[in-house]
Length: 353
Image 1 (tube, rainbow, N blue to C red):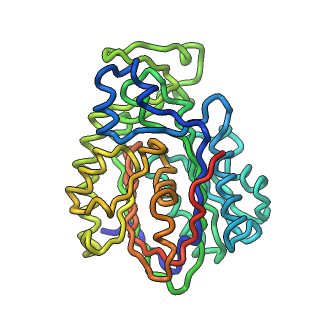
Image 2 (cartoon, rainbow, N blue to C red):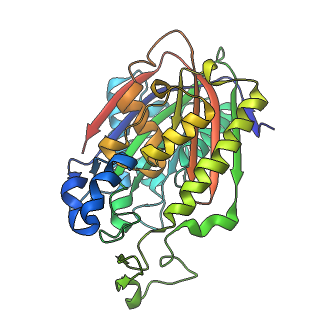
């Protein structure tokens, strides 16, 4: 059954920000993948990625710039905001949280709730849910920031992750709308699969030490540190194609909708082959499923709003409501989905840091 239904809210505006540094995987991955590189790029769709490089750009930097773009070019001002929700796996520090820093940098009123949410691939759906609940309570707009700098914890010599991940930050304004349709959310968590995607060497269970920075070699020829992401690629693929498919099919059945009822299905940008399989099994047309991982890579919690800003922002700027399915899935293992209508939407597109 549907987990949560929320009325009288809407997405008002959105912007995305990516680093200027472009990594072309055909150049980057030759030494690691050899003759398999081109077929791997074709299947994953990961042609280019945006990465922070050595410039020490953070998720906070990227999200704050995206938010400033929204405040400068939309009808929303920072003084209107009643709360800041910051979804990230890569905060500037363990303490204080990124949301508090964003409040100060963006001159958001001090009488505001500001907190972080630690989530990855499904993080944008969680962020929308929390933000919409807050909007209903305080009757003021919420600034939802989603951003990750994945490149800092991906080993360039790990065959399962090296060409997949990019960096990005996004800003979304969730506000009141007394005439909007109901948003239907659903969530699912399979914590037994949490080790499919993990960073094992940073945390209080495994404290950082000198061994954490040592590169270890693995049977497939990859090398990575304990502080780098490790991913069971085959396990994640089967999880998405089988479990996420059945989850979304059940969600749509519960709502009594089919693919023909949606203008777009906007999925977490895991990789192209995975999304094509998922879309095919759910009977979505290719033009209903926008993809942008070829420009930016997998940007974790930022991938859904980045995809919207890059591919379909202008199409959603209409007074005619358009029904959208969004779904994020990955680390946790966690799923999230929302059925909503979008209208009168302001997209500031994608800018560079």
